[in-house]
Length: 116
Length: 116
DNA sequence: ATGTTATGTAAGTATTCGCTTACAAAACTA
DNA sequence: TAGTTTTGTAAGCGAATACTTACATAACAT
Image (cartoon, rainbow over all chains, first blue to last red; front, side, top):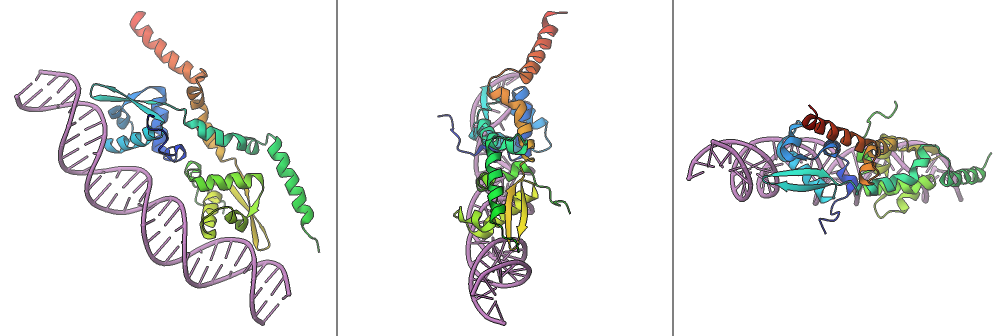
C-alpha cells in the first residue's frame, strides 16, 4: 500500500539535510514552507527531500487546504536499528556470543601461523 | 596520518554492498580476495569499498605478508545509534523522554490559554 | 631467477545526487 | 473577480557514486 519502501531507508538517512528534517519535524509536524525556512537551501530542494522521505515511508503528508503538513513516521528506522543491533555488542565491548566466536577464530588463526 | 579524509559513517553504510561486507567480516576477519569472492562484483570494486570503510574508521587493515586482513572496528556506528536513540521511542510508541518533551510543550501551550 | 598471488590505483563510463531556476496548479484573500 | 500563497515538478548542471578494465607493485613459491 502507501508507497511501500520503494526507496532504501539507509540511503534516505545518508543525507545530513534529510536527517535534520527528520529531527525537526519529529518534534512537531510542519508544513513545507516552514521546514524550508529552517534551511539555507531552496524550497524546491526541501520539497525533493520530503519526497524521498515519503517514498521510503519516513514521512507522511497531511493535507490541510493548500498546506501540506509533514510528520514523521519512523517505523522504517527499525530496519536500521535491526541491522545495528547484533553489531552493537561488538563496538560496546559487551562480550556476548559473537565475541566468543571471534575469540575462537583468532585462536585457531594464530595456531595455524607457522613460526620459523 | 590518522585517517585524513573523514568520511560520514551514514554515507558509508548507505551502500548495501558495504553493509554486507561489514556483516561478513564482523564474524571473521578476511583478506580482500576472500571478501571479493563472496560478491558478484570485481575485486577492485571491493577494494574501493574497503577503502571507504577504512576512511570512516569502520574497518582496519592488518597486513600479513602480501595479504591484508580486514576487520571491523565498529565504534563509528555509535554515531548512528546515537542519532537513532531519541527517535526510537517515537516509532516504538514507548513514551519516554521525547514524549515528555512533547507533552510539556503541549502543557505550556494549554497553560497559556487556560491559566492566566 | 621466473612465475604466481594479493593487492592498490588509474582511467573511463553510466548513473545518481543535490541543488538551482522557472513555471504551473491549486487554494486561500481582498 | 483578481491577486497572493503554498506547493509540485520539469529542466539543467556540476559533483559524486559504483562500477569496469588495465596496469603496477610487492610478497611468496618453485
